[in-house]
Length: 192
Image 1: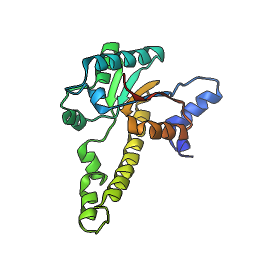
Image 2: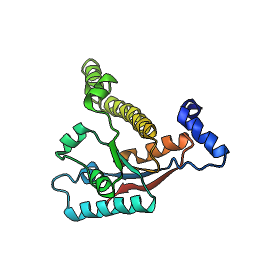
Image 3: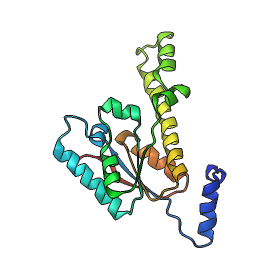
């Protein structure tokens, strides 16, 4: 089992056999990236409601860290300097970090558009490569999601609230469960 190969996971199992409690819990809120970032044009009342919901979840579940599907490039793409979650974490004095891959990390894993476009341009696809593009994007998402989980596990700060795009909620939940760790989806696709 993969979880047996992670040294600190073995320590958690050892602690649980000794009757010690280790709460490696993940709480997930899926939403839109425009709401996550309070992108220009997003209704202020919706942003305020999202902020209040993040605070509520953090307080109710004694969250010690907010992790987000976001990167510096993602912030720039959304034309913002920080996410709503980063602001909540700062206000609550808890940890915060982005777990998504930066463009150079994606390129190093061949997850950028270069390899995909090269194949589309040199093959005669009946749908202009649409099916291939969707499959390639799904492959990239699967790799990214595993990176997010690895980055969250490496920090060892629990319980954690993970904010991600709604399209990733189910797969991140399934991956976390596959490790035998507790996970709770607070919202699959939060919209105030």
